Length: 326
Image (cartoon, rainbow, N blue to C red; front, side, top):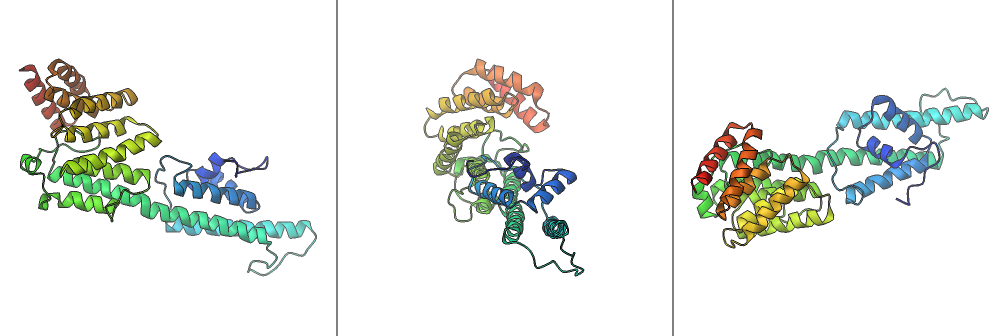
């Protein structure tokens, strides 16, 4: 952050970033616009912050923000109008006669032109980000939800996914068939070339799709590699550990030792996010597989009162009966 140097009256980095993400109220946004119209330093700072966001060096995760085409035009027009007004006020203070022309005066300084260019570039950058990066991950998530609902492959619970019956035929086959088409489409949405994307949100979505598709050991291994990378760079969340546990469980079919690792991951998920009830269900399912029936019963009895979805409640009660019968 050494690059960003502010004068006393300049907004700090957090406020500039809030302006970039369109999170300020009207008067706050207007104040920043007015300041940017006369401060090339802050325009440079804003451009620097945006560059950091785009490269992933300033924020671990960037959340979507509202910025449509109309907002883009309004934001740009406001800044240019304020720059013109600032120049007019400066001419009046200096004793020069104000221009009667409706066209902008030709007395713009180089720094003012550079400032306008920087702000417009920032707004356009924000618009493109909102239209491409964020929507592709969101579209992929909706496509994944549709795929899971039509052909669910694994018994574990992913946060935010509706309950549906496991397609046991596909679970056994684990081959790329027509039923995998929806999963493949979701995957291509977030990663058209099949490579691991550079953005955290896209990486996380790709790992989710691979875990739910579970078309073979390669899916689980790739998902695990992605999640381990996300955990290493941070921030660490319960949902990441839950996803890691799911990938390990998928690997547990060919390597039973992975089941204990999965239980450990679900435990870490609950330590980081105690309200992530899906981790209780998932841990109970794996505990049943390794014959830790008492632990599984305890997790299910914790999970059931907190779950409101009828489908997942029925699945949990069925699993609880199986656990108590052993």
